[in-house]
Image (cartoon, rainbow, N blue to C red; front, side, top):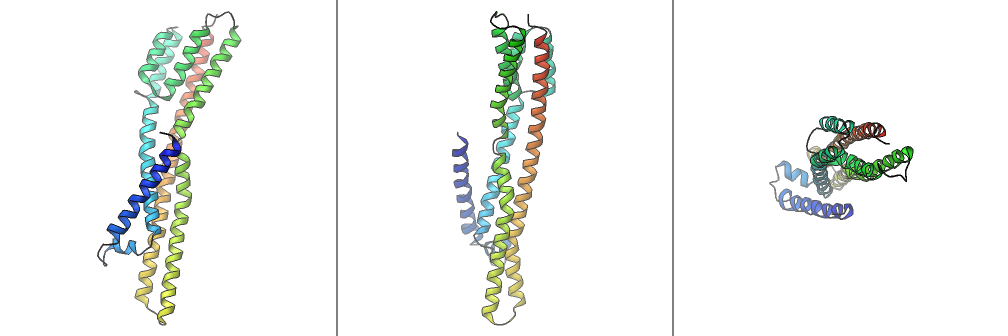
Length: 248
């Protein structure tokens, strides 16, 4: 499924669920319940609920994708086996190890090894050109894998940025309503004013909570991707160094 289509469907589904829960559950809750107080916070509470569903979906999707990108076994273990086969000149075994491992690193290395096997006996390339060609193939394969690893991170960072603002907007609107009602009443109503402010602050709490969750998720996945990128760079470097000794 294309990324734009996935985001569009998720947006529609998330806010449909949020609006349904907001009006059908929160809107019919007893007046002395927290759910009713949240309902009084206004429609922006439903917007924040939709954002929270989106964040949860992106987190689950990234966890599954990165787990798949890592492959079947731990990357250090796979890299050790891979370097062992390449050092021994057993490229078929190295390719089979990549096929068994799968994942982003395995895909990149397999592409480089396949290209090396294609040109290793060719007289059209000298030693330097062969290494340049293998390096180019590895870099292209890496560029193709990176968007898969970084997918949906921009969406997480965007939600982290705007959720707090949406929460503050809901709070400001709630405060305006509270003071407008107080002005129309013509006398101070401490209980009513306090209740209105409490309801308005649900927006702030929701916005800040979603923002924190999105930021934590974004930083967690960024760190995971950085570590995987480092392993990819190290693997490419080791493979190139070993292949250079095998070129005639």
